[in-house]
Amino acid sequence: DVQMTQSLSYLAASPGESVSISCKASKSISNYLAWYQQKPGEAYKLLIYSGSTLQSGTPSRFSGSGSGTDFTLTIRSLEPEDFGLYYCQQYYEKFTFGSGTKLEIK
Amino acid sequence: VQLVESGGGLVQPGKSLKLSCSASGFTFSSYGMHWIRQAPGKGLDWVAYISSSSGTVYADAVKGRFTISRDNAKNTLYLQLNSLKSEDTAIYYCARSLRRVYDYWGQGVMVTVSS
Image (cartoon, rainbow over all chains, first blue to last red; front, side, top):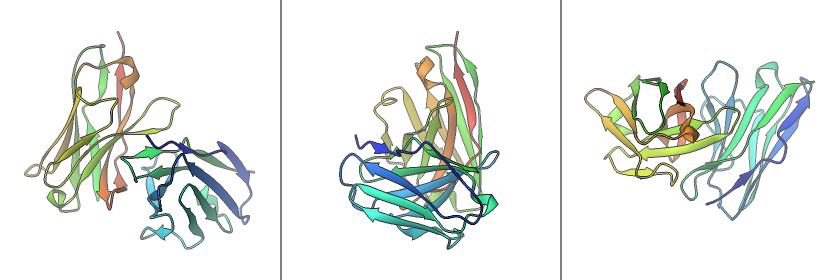
């Protein structure tokens, strides 16, 4: 199985700052990587797929990069609504998720 | 697009349960669908997938015990959970498949396996 590692389980930042969340695959997954956001009381939301393609409705301050084994989700100029949980997911071989990164307001 | 799960609850180890996911707002028969679960305090685990033509794929942890199915006439996705174990305790989410990722998720339904 492909293991996905999000090294940071917790990240604190202030509105207006930029943050990056990393995700590492245990083997090359090309660009078969997606990012999801979860906020309390809301359904999970697809943000990015194919490593860097923004899902319809995802604000342009979000961007994804990487291929192979190392991937990054970057959020420029954080808005209050961006705070929540972020998961990466590979879909190269079946489907596995990272352990999640909680982004909180500093 | 709306996905609403139901059928969860408390069940004893070794027993069975059937989850439903009612879909609306899109042509259900045209999309593959997934079940994903999240154990309390844990991360997300993919459980099963069914294609628009009803081909199925399962995670190793549930293969042989869980069965995913769909009724396109009722716009409903199902997950039959048999031989339940305590480690199956989780929130179960249904999600629509878009190019192998999940573009819409339900709010989830809780399944608790305990004696």
